[in-house]
Structure formats: structure tokens, C-alpha cells
Image 1 (spheres, helix red, strand yellow):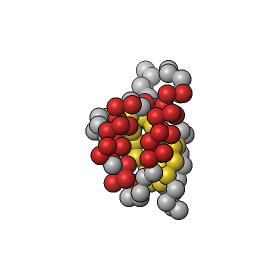
Image 2 (tube, one colour):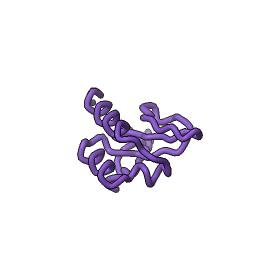
Image 3 (tube, helix red, strand yellow):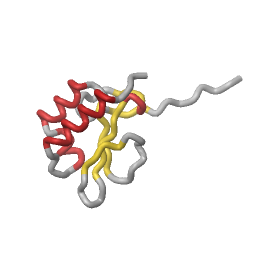
Image 4 (cartoon, one colour):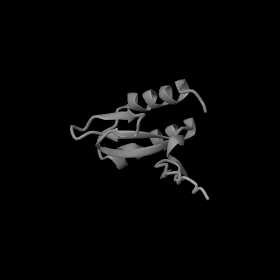
Length: 92
């Protein structure tokens, strides 16, 4: 009898929905306060997960959700970078 592999789930900070980790994008704040996209999900630092839906990114931008979770000032260009990243990423 084979055991089914556990799928790691993460909660989107914008929408609050639980999704598999692979369907999310991780935004990370390093110790120096630099905010970046973490495509591997393994960078060290404080992380926040967002759904790969444009609506979730827009909601996070409008409500300053990333700023609250990462406890650092978020530049507007970060949100544009996230949207660009999810649009160019191939769908599975």
C-alpha cells in the first residue's frame, strides 16, 4: 500500500484562502529590509504568500497587506514586479 504524499498548504495573505504551496508566490523580506519575490520558496527571511491571481495582488496593493505582514515600507514597483512575474510564468 502506497502512502499519498502530503501537499503543503499555505494561506494567501490577501484573500485568506488556503492553496497548495505551488499555486502561491512567496514575497520575502531579508534581514536588511529588502523585499523581493522568492520563486524557490527557500530564501531566508520573513515571508508572505500571495495567490497567483491578479485580483489578489491588486487587493494586497490597495489594502497595504504586504506592508503589514512584512513590517516594512513596500514600494509600488514591487506590486508591478509581482504582476509581471505571474503573467510571464508558464501555467501548469
